[in-house]
Length: 179
Image (cartoon, rainbow, N blue to C red; front, top):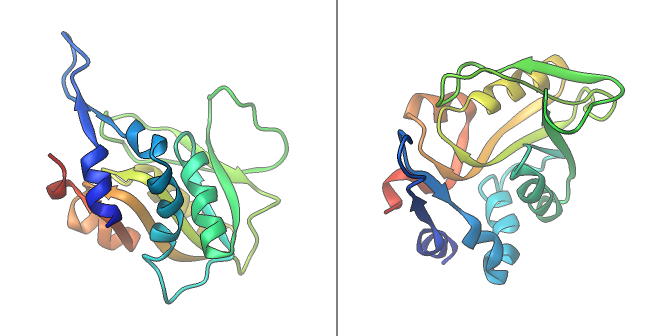
């Protein structure tokens, strides 16, 4: 079962003195060929009754996970970029400001304004949802484009229940499942 394998390959890393928290290590997920083959269909399968036309996922890990889910769902893929990152956005971009994330930071996140269209059926995807800040901002982007939000899907959800409900979030693993 994929969920069990995700837990087995997961670990926490202590970044050392001065750090206030452990850091998740999900690198084993991407190294395991069976997980890599199963993760797209499994995440797409969290919404079996819905057929997205496009999957949107935030950089950085979303640029790997999003296309895997999109292929499994028979949908297109749109990357969501963080403003101020290495990649300069050219052309029209639909931006939204996030609420504070788990570090109290806010950022702008956006997608190519030419590629998200009214009537698109959007599935938001992320590897880990803790505060839901990035997905909240992407919900605004989707709504402002006139597209329809199916919901959000994640590998891991450690967010409070009210965040999961607001985002219509479904996940393969919860925080309670992790060591």
